[in-house]
Amino acid sequence: MRLCAERVLPELEPIGEAFRERCGLLERLPGALDALWDESPLLRAIACIGLPAEYNPHPLALAGATDGGCPYPLHLAIIEQLSRFDANGLMALPGASLSTRAVLELGDAAQQRRFFERFLDGPHWTFFAVSEPEVGSDASQVRSGWRMDEDGGVRIRADKMLIGGVTRASVGVLYLAGPEGAAPRLAMFEPGAHPGRVETSLLPSLGLRGAGIGRLRIDDCRLPADALLGGHLRGLQQGLNGLTRVFERHRPMVAAMALGTARGLLDGLREHGATGLEGWYLRYRALGRMLDEVAERYQRGESRPAATSQIKFLATEFAERTARLLAHRLPPEAWLRGGRWRRRYRDAFAFEYMEGTRFIHLQHAARAFRPQGGRHGVDA
Ligand SMILES: Cc1cc2nc3c(=O)[nH]c(=O)nc-3n(C[C@H](O)[C@H](O)[C@H](O)COP(=O)(O)OP(=O)(O)OC[C@H]3O[C@@H](n4cnc5c(N)ncnc54)[C@H](O)[C@@H]3O)c2cc1C
Image (cartoon, rainbow, N blue to C red):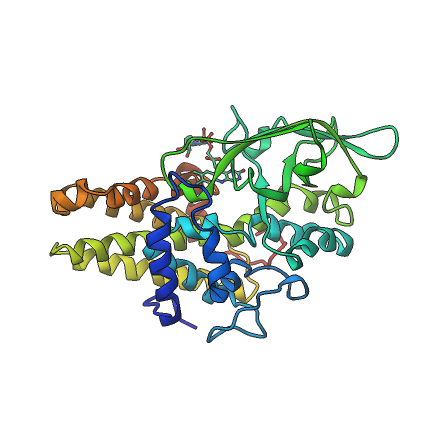
């Protein structure tokens, strides 16, 4: 399936128009997209891509979907196409998120049931919390931690920052350092289950307001031992490797959002009479083909973390360069009136900080030029 090179899924156009209209309100009204969930069965199905079939009340009915599931290249194509309108909408909706993938990768059957069953009752937001104050991108330095207590339970303390959707989430996954000699682990956590010990707050942000980034502080909560994911796996697979596998699926999704955003900006410039954009469209298509290849390899089960870093880095950088065109190629009245294009300009610079920053991906991406083997779950 080669959808990314020039993706046109006509069914998505009405949703895209609704995104365009409502995302404009997100900066003032965090719930601006909620009504869309009720209105559009297709949108509900898109938001739930990635939930296991038995817990997904909204299977996808779109050409290319298989038994209500969505092949990865089709998922990326949907993300890219909707992001041409506004990427914020994809992040503001309830449904699947990074933590979905983490629970699928590392959770046993009982943990998966506990996490996913809630989706059968209605919409839920989830969060995936790695970033921390002072620590930023460097997961090896996290200070939030877990330890076993005398009764066989787990005690956790955490201070997590810049966490998407955390103020609305009913459940999420925390990345926690272990006590002396123990590995870091991912823990399933329900903020509402510990009154007085959990504080969440929305952080002010400049771009991609739909992500709803917030802070989460947890003051010494006791959890059952099976809140820790990956207990049935070998040591190295439990923490950092699990994180790598989650990111390998989600980084190309950020690339798809960045690429779709760039395409939306180019189309906007063209509609406002800008000329000489052929080279920009050529670059867009070349990156689309790279993204296709990453998607198809992932779908085949091949693990190529360096290639995912490469496309994330290149697509993000392309979105930023395209955004810089706006200020001097859009007519001044379009640039200055209403705020739509300035908002989309701000959004274009936030992708860098999602799932790994530029220089870190640049270091990883160099490895994409070396021959690699390996399947998912095996270090390449
Ligand atoms: C829209 C949005 C949604 C987000 N959602 C989530 C979420 O759901 N969960 C979550 O855990 N986090 C989330 N984040 C946080 C994101 O992952 C962090 O912003 C990121 O980790 C960067 O952290 P920092 O701002 O502290 O920057 P830093 O890590 O301090 O990096 C600052 C700069 O230094 C560079 N740098 C850092 N280390 C090195 C190095 N070793 N070598 C060379 N250069 C380096 C970086 O490339 C970057 O340019 C989100 C961020 C955004 C913008």
